[in-house]
Length: 277
Image 1 (cartoon, rainbow, N blue to C red):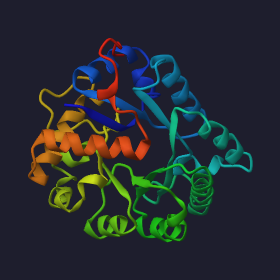
Image 2: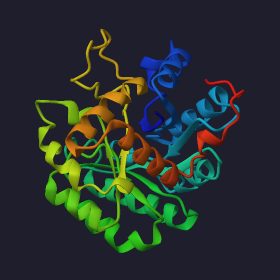
Image 3: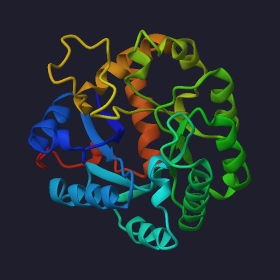
Image 4: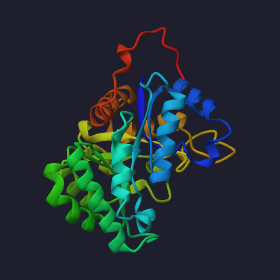
């Protein structure tokens, strides 16, 4: 069984001491490819560097580059130029994480909107997909994304936690949906359970969002309470359960969807002597 983790915060300080072991455990669990999330210019640069250092063969680790809405207050006239340079790198496969967060409002909303609009323009001009963040802002995101959607090759709503109305609106815009361990949380994720059958197989992708969102159904739970890409199989299990499909079937379709979205190589075509991470 092969899985692709489309959202991993490998640059987080909690991974600094044991990054190779984390990647080895992921490979053992069947997570054969991972997309490292860039959340600001510095972290996007760091994610790209990790791809180069940890995957010299360049077929297992990839990254995104963008400015998260929390950091939108730091967006300047030069940010687009710096970001475009990162997006020109072959291992960088999407613009983001970008979007709107009206839940925490760490950046003023007008600045979040400006940073998002400029990153969408970059994606359109470069022909790259978009890795979107949205919290309590689905209507405004739709208003901003709608007019440019035809010029953006593809977009995924990362870590979807919304309601049926938001899901259907995103699907109407032909967006992909990323599901995390949020669905495993009996306190706040159960509303996602009946929605899983409504997502077309070719639009559904899986992500750990590690080190955040440890699946609460995981047994035994890690003592550190740190999530890892190796735990993506638990998200797979929960989503398959509520879609009413076999885990292998979901693994096949979600992996195919991720590879198509991020233009990732098919690992089954790699020679067997190529060593894992």
